Amino acid sequence: MGVGQSPATEVKMKEDGYSGSEREYIRKHHRHEAAENQCTSFLIKHIRAPLHLVWSLVRRFDEPQTYKPFVRRCIVHGNVEIGSVREVDVRSGLPATTSTERLELLDDDHHILSVRIVGGDHRLTNYSSILSLHPEVVDGTPATLVIESFVVDVPPGNTKDETCYFVQALINCNLKSLAHASEQLAV
Image (cartoon, rainbow, N blue to C red; front, side):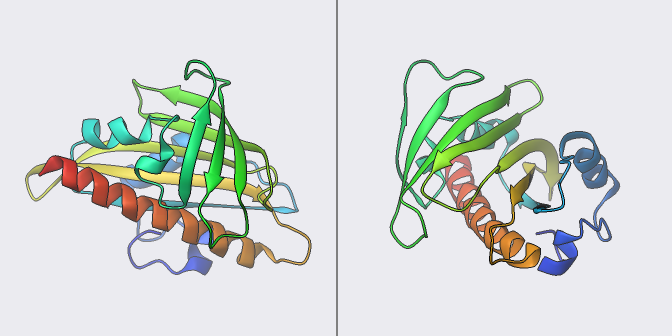
């Protein structure tokens, strides 16, 4: 979530409190057309590490466990390219054990990664995410602005707010872990 934003504000996609460049990146790279039975949102994380270091972790579709703490194991058959599918084993503690995910976009020039969940034993039906990285400077040091957005079906028995809150919590955990791993590399 953006600084000073509550989950309800994020879910409604309000851009209050975001810088002009953040709003522009969201407008340009993070548009999801949500159907009536779906929720969509985005989260922002500022990482005190240069973009090339952060991207070196994010772009590894075959090794999400490098920074995603809930991933136990990942297998990709063949080369990593658009359309590649990975089988992910999830650590215990989540309401899932496996996830099958397809690489939709891997843009090394613009630092954008998009993944769609195509199977697994979880409730994230029609889940699609876009993660974009943007260079910035924090206290005179190269840093990275990370924006991750998603759209997902609201499962029967859940509300849009509950669904978005759950997915945001997972993404927030991943982004914190990405920041930690990237900042360790930058030291």
